[in-house]
Image (cartoon, one colour):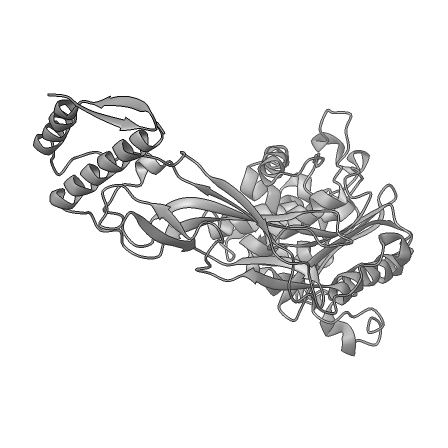
Length: 462
């Protein structure tokens, strides 16, 4: 049967039998597994920016204003990886004994993983006994513990102790150097290349143990900072060794070895080094060769913020420390670490996500963790850009447990005077449980959507 109606002079035939048939089919096909129409895109991205930063934030001075007299330098904050200062930081240069930081890292890792122990005895081999430069005069066949040799390496920069440890872990120094280069790649060090475990020039290695390659050890200031970041992050007990001011290796030794790091905070009471002692400084490694000049990777912590500095190519022992002071002062004076997003924060424009087959058709979402950035000191409202991406809606089907990951949000920040944009991505998670609806509710929801679509289709004809 057909009914005719007149609208604005136009006739449209509505086949009620067809409508009835469709409703009938809908009723009889209803089940708890009834599908809902997905009307949202698979992913959604929105970008919003907070108001401009306010407060009495310091203006970041230029690197040039520091008057650094170095081949290269860099300053980073290790938890965010933010670069605060850079001077030829990616230029590969001879790092001298800063090379030993990689040896220290790998040996400490071997202890941490149970491959060796601190009290394990090490028998000194020929290669170690023939090392020159900084050393503790080990003889072939001598026995010392891993810890004793490690202290000699960290405090006195002893080349012979370093090689003894490398041979213990790697089986040979050559095999250990392969481990060093592999670890550098895994850490993301872009320029680092090692030919030995000590940082000595190749020609200064014992002839019988010299690699048959025409290369030297190189490492940029940035790579040294990356390596230091891994040390302080993966081995936070590093200060057990790096803060030792002096160490008597053997009872018969007339004098103890003195830590080459004059900037240790503890040296504030040392008449020889108190002019260089730096508040909060507790590591890491000095270096010097004729090719490298004087180098130093330092790290200090103040007000809960740790910074890592690297200076390369200073013209004297004292100069590497006075230049390091400039670099660290630049960081601690001008920057602070601040939580810019609290955990469980709502993302504007993405307060909820749609849910299929739920009692409610959406569920509230929040970020799963807080976000911390480095900001100019005194910044109260940093301008943060937020980009959210929601999972494919077809996968968001009730029931969904509270705390389920349903998307991601990326926070970005770039402060005036800083060249690098800081970014961190965290998960968006449900802040409530999304319960599954019963089949009857799903049925009438589907009927309602069908009738709504039908009505809108008819309305749009006019």
